[in-house]
Length: 281
Image (cartoon, rainbow, N blue to C red; front, side, top):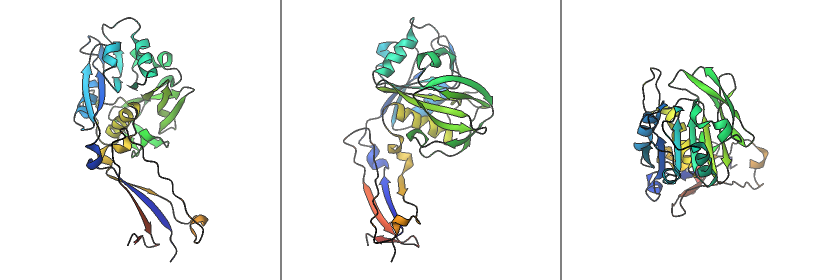
């Protein structure tokens, strides 16, 4: 019998989640700081309801405040309110030291092309909601095409060290991410946390998954440890010449977890042409 398919199944359900401490994430609260921003309440709601995140709203951007979190989110902040001078540089220093930052939509207050030029090469407004395609990156894991809740998004031109995450219906980048020093920056075009009626609402569906994946990656982990992904199948497509016996087949599966104590069970199975498991018996 020819063996045509090899699959590794990574069981990353709640049995793994319980061994890992929650990701500490701060969501900047522009309104509480006397400023203006859009989406932070919806983002905070989505994160605070998820068991893998310990989320807080914070109004003051200081070294001490940033240091409390694995990652921080800036949700389309136009005016930051009363902050210390040079707070953008504090944000960059936080990332260079290992922190993570997620910035959504316009968010002109952060001045990303100046603060993180290697990630954000400038933005353009695009009226439309469809996010059509995705590159191979941990942030895009499990995400398929979707429409943003809000009626427009920003095209994000990648900086020199950025990877494009996703593209819109006209094939322009709508999200990028990159390493800055020891930390990570995610720049997303959608106005996550804001509805079509400009009310603050928790994202749902693929837009919620984009948020959760982005925060997990920015915090220094990889999204597939999150329990909602359940059992993940990593497969090799049948039909390649190397699958004809007796030539050997080698499969490499990388499992990345945030805490060394987390146990991720791995099950390897061999299937025949009909899709039936023939090993283990």
